[in-house]
Length: 118
Image (cartoon, rainbow, N blue to C red; front, side):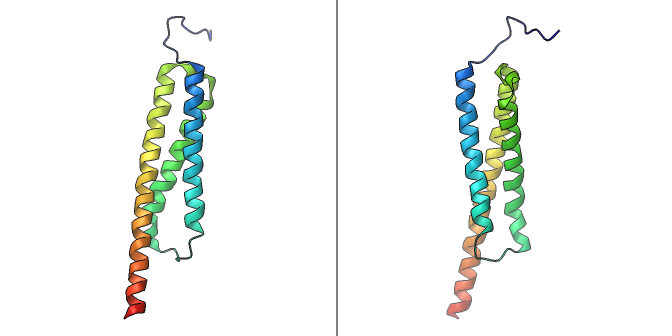
């Protein structure tokens, strides 16, 4: 029924555990950035959605990857590799969103400085 093929390609549990740790740490950093950015004194504008959407989608993908990796089936190589691909997509989206957030904040601060200096 649910027997695994003895010839099936499995990964080492220790290797998977290291991946779970890495995914968990980077997910925590991503969530921490969103929390910190939400507390930013610069008021949110509609254009900030350009950064928020990829960050939140990226975080959701990271969470999905973590949930896949926490399942015992993730010891099977195809599932492990799928979780890694989902995680990489999530981390890339999150990084792009963070970059956009930083640029938007820099432009916002620059515009305010120009108005105050004028």
